[in-house]
Length: 220
Image (cartoon, rainbow, N blue to C red):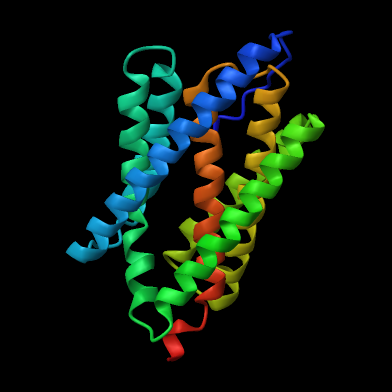
């Protein structure tokens, strides 16, 4: 998950690994659908940009999921997190939708994210390659993007936005590889933590791609 714990293989049976994978992708589909609903509600309501509340909410809910993943509260916390993240995406979607080709840009970002997710997941599952070495990159990447995001409140430039978007896409890809690898190698046996890790990767990739594709929307 996004807490980036160091994990070790546990010799988990193949049947158990397959069960975790199935549960992970089933829950992932539900959380993505729920996020789409909350994002649509945010767009329809003209939801405001939440600023620092987005970061505080994300970190707090990630911590909550991590602490409750092995209890009955794990699923409610997961949907609370993903619903919140979907809602917080509303302002970006609204800004892009205000352009003539906004719908196309969103569809393009969605398609690119879907293709990348399927390719990365298929490669990791088929090769069972160990991507645990990406842990350091993920930690540094999240620190960089959070720092840049805070700086953007006081000093915004198109270049900073581009850097943040590229880093977000890279983090998203790395997180999908890292989390999927942990599951197929028996290092992560909790499907809630696995789901949230992959979800955050997809979210970062989609939002980063959408920001890059729509970088010039303000000029229309």
